[in-house]
Amino acid sequence: MKVQGLKKNYGKSTVVDNVSFEIHKGMVTSFIGPNGAGKSTVIGMISRLVAKDQGLISFHGKELEKWNSKELAKHLAILTQSNQIQMKLTVEELVTFGRFPHCGGRLSGEDEGKISQAITYMELDAVSYTHLTLPTILLV
Image (cartoon, rainbow, N blue to C red):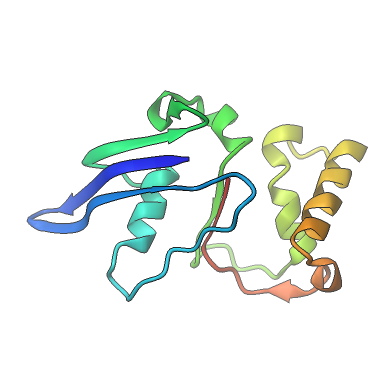
C-alpha cells in the first residue's frame, strides 16, 4: 500500500497534512502519536470510511477508489478500537471474520486452514481461545 500527500480538513482545521508512507506486505506497521494527531483519520481514509480531501492511496498498484468493495474486502480489513457491537470474541473468532469476504460465512476446510495459518504466523496459538478487547487494526 502506498499513501502520498494525504490531507484531511474538518472546516478550517487541518487534521492530516501531507502524510506519505508505504505499508509493505508481510510487515507489521504501527501508527504512533498523541491523541488528536490524525492516526485514526488516516486509517479511516485508507479503509474508505473517511473521505480524503487530497492525496493518493494505492493498493496493489491500483488507486483505492477504483477497487470494487467486495474485492477490496478480500485484501483489506479494519477493526476499529470502539465498536457498537458488544460481544466477547476469542482471538480465533476474530481472525475468522477475515475469511468472510472469501467464503460468505460458510467456512470450508481451506478457510479453516488459512485461519489456523494466520494464528500460527502471528504466534497467537497460546491465546487463540482467549477473549479480547478490540484495538484498532488494519489488515493488509
